[in-house]
Length: 72
Image 1: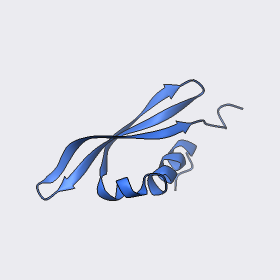
Image 2 (image 1 turned 90 degrees about the vertical axis):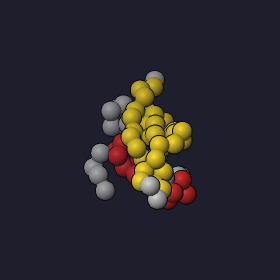
Image 3 (image 1 turned 120 degrees about the vertical axis):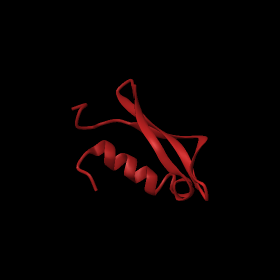
Image 4 (image 1 turned 90 degrees about the horizontal axis):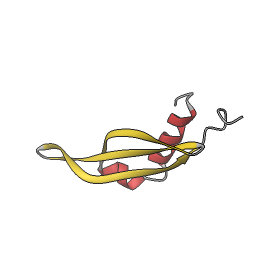
């Protein structure tokens, strides 16, 4: 587990909110979109197959993240 609140936030949602999706797909890349007062993580997903890892058109939109420490 990380000491970074944003990493803990992502890990929580991977393990809980998107557990079924993460069991069958891989995160190809993840980026943050800055929003008013916070940020939203977006993950592009890929799928493991017999031929290797293949791209999909699946995106995982995480809930908005608001860093309580930064907003004090």
